Amino acid sequence: MANHLRLTLFLLISLFILVSCGQPEPIYSDDFSNADSGWDVFENASTSANYNEGSYKINLKLKNQEKWILANQDFGNVAVEVDATRLNGTDDNSYGVVCKFQSIKQYYAVVISSDGAYMIEKRVGGVYQRLTGDYFELSDLIQKGSTLNRIRVECGQDYLALFTNGKLVDRVEESEYLEGDVGLIATTYGEAGLTVSFDNFAVYELP
Image (tube, helix red, strand yellow):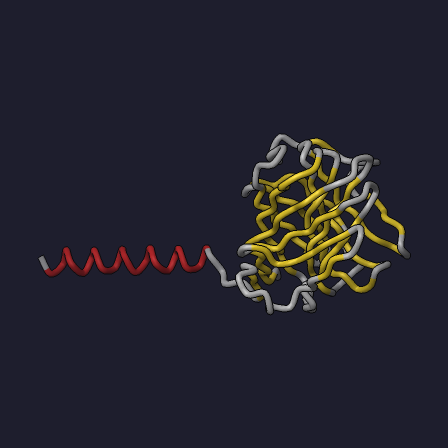
């Protein structure tokens, strides 16, 4: 009986260690339950961004409009995760994560759209360079419409990668920007009006 109990205890401890090793703690996180956690809050004739009922919402009222919001942090190689849901607007949109944000002219943007497409971009001198094809690429790993997507963007030392809902969508080689801020981004195109809700934002350190 004593040997059986020791074996059971050993197995339980081993399982706990394996689970703990597989779930690293974030170096920064925000569930947006605290409206004073540091993200910008504002509203004007074309855009609003604010905390709302335990999430953070970006609302764009015009077409061909882009807005990014920063966490006011500074990181090197990280993975950024967030839950994102389109609350209203058409499928002609994009939303996701920015990383290694150094200025309004230098950062990476990794986005998905409500029609099941994605893009990985690099902002250089105020102009986007598309790193995944000439325009949006389709993926059946992205939930369409107003269904929640868990987005993970890895901004590594020499690569960028997009995961949705736990599966790799695409990966590109890229190594110019070494560090910077992280944040959220949303964009409208030919149709006006878009509201995206973000929640459970987390940043994990990469080697």
